[in-house]
Amino acid sequence: MDVRRRSEEAVYSSKVFAADEKPLKPHKQQQEEDNTLLIDASDALPLPLYFTNGLFFTMFFSVMYFLLSRWREKIRNSTPLHVVTLSELGAIVSLIASVIYLLGFFGIGFVQTFVARGNNDSWDVEDENDEQFILEEDSRRGPCAAATTLGCAVPTPPAKHIAPIVPQQPAVSIAEKPAPLVTPAASEEDEEIIKSVVQGKIPSYSLESKLGDCKRAASIRKEVLQRITGKSLEGLPLDGFNYESILGQCCEMPIGYVQIPVGIAGPLLLNGREYSVPMATTEGCLVASTNRGCKAIYASGGATSILLRDGMTRAPCVRFGTAKRAAELKFFVEDPINFETLANVFNQSSRFARLQRIQCAIAGKNLYMRFVCSTGDAMGMNMVSKGVQNVLDYLQNEYTDMDVIGISANFCSDKKPAAVNWIEGRGKSVVCEAIITEEVVKKVLKTEVAALVELNMLKNLTGSALAGALGGFNAHASNIVSAVYIATGQDPAQNIESSHCITMMEAVNDGKDLHISVTMPSIEVGTVGGGTQLASQSACLNLLGVKGANREAPGSNARLLATIVAGSVLAGELSLMSAISTGQLVNSHMKYNRSTKDVTKASS
Image: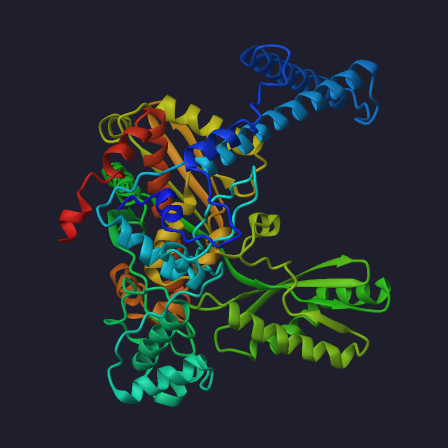
């Protein structure tokens, strides 16, 4: 209902006047008298309004353009902005004058419109029950407002000023807390627990230990969160997940799990064996593109992958009173005889940890020691940290003035792009290569060998160099690494250094065939520990034949997984570069990565 202000004639017509009161003038007559006092915005202008407005608008924008041009020249010439010439001073004065005029013009127009609206004799009420609306509206405004409608005396408004009657609006809280979402609990006991957590009597993190049921704890925590925040978590699934499997290992205070689709690329023919590569992703075309690369590699006889190094790192920082003392420890650690002693101390921390070397760097009186060790089939962060702690405890007995600043001091370097990983490697260092025949390049990849070689040089090498890339001399290695990591239970954050990759392409066999390789110095993977023991991730590892620890040759499963990651990256690089060289990248994404499905009909 479009309700507007009621006629004020009805209000005044029913009024009972006191003996010393004068009746109000008819509303239209009052309005005509008041209108004589209103001032038009153009009354004080010597020129027509449209001409004056155009003049001041032109002056405003001209002066602004002039000042901006002058300031730009000052910036280019390194001239201080506060140095003002006479012409600039005049422009500033003109600008101020035009701004004052414009503000005055619009201010007078606003006041005139406001007063005229207050003097309007009636607003239409597009409803037949207007009298009922007036009574209801006045009853909400209080007894005095209701008396106005019932004929009670109303003070005469001051002459020449008729204030508009504005209905009182209810107070609205700016930071209003959302209403709690309440879902009935499974039992009265659960309802009591929910209320206790909401009130702060029971800590949310202690639900698993108090209840002894991880799924029930997650369900209660989810409902508590909905009631506290007022936000619905209806789309976050709770059932179908083993919450006991993550307790104390993968995730704290769970409220559900996120669904990520898993696709299969392959078969990838690598070192004479076929692998179906699981990829967890929400990016369209990624699995299809990698699959096309696998097809091209398979049709060309397969790829070869070689493990170059295998060593996880951890780098503590210790401090001495002088740089000389820090250098003494550096020489002590690097001495082959002393290193053997430290290696024995380190290796006692685990059956699989084996210290390989210690790389030292000094910054003043601070010494950074980068420990490198093999870690079996585990990714190895906890294993190497434990061994480093044993060595630090041993060294403090020999160097009592040594102050341990931190067991990790970013010389490792973990989950950050760093040149030390790009040069020295971290985790598994792998190179993977393949020769793609001319026929496959044309029929499967729909491009030419020369076009791929030129694009790789200008994009992956030259373009990355211009960008100052650190380990990013590739097309999209991170895409494949992230998808395989999530599917197989790796740490997704380690995608940062694990995606360090340089892609090389070269024409071979008299320029007919394509030699492509990817070199990845920091692939950090494991087949035991962390998220690898979860049901879904364990199934993906089992699909690749690398599930769990290899009892016969410890570490071989993790090393094989690293080579599969490199082979998958090779396939992804080959396909994407081909799509870019033929100009099909945008078309393929528009075709396969833009849903045209009516989601509302599909869900119903």
